[in-house]
Image (cartoon, rainbow, N blue to C red; front, top):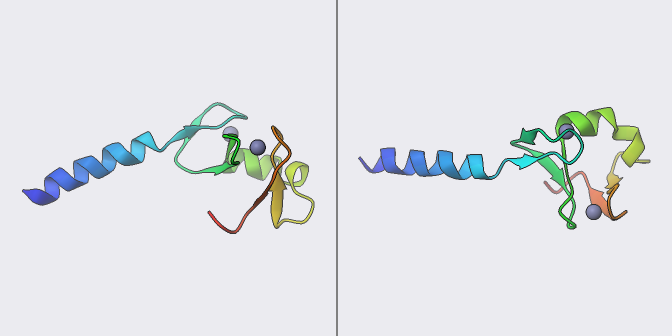
Amino acid sequence: MNGKKISSYKQKKLKAQETPCHCCGIPAPFCWRCRCGFAMCQDCMDENFWGVTCNGITWDCPDCGAQNGFGNQ
Ligand SMILES: [Zn+2]
Ligand SMILES: [Zn+2]
């Protein structure tokens, strides 16, 4: 009976973590995030890849211009 309680709690938590993408507005379970709060879903990142990165290692936030790494998420 404990397992049931934990799994429903986990589902609720996962759903709350979905962030609306700032480009397409669709909530995605995974978003690239900047410290300013900007979030971009994987689809938009794929589409705009060479618009936000020049080396494939870091991406520039279109909102605040900060550099974010691809590796640490
Ligand atoms: Zn998007
Ligand atoms: Zn930013």
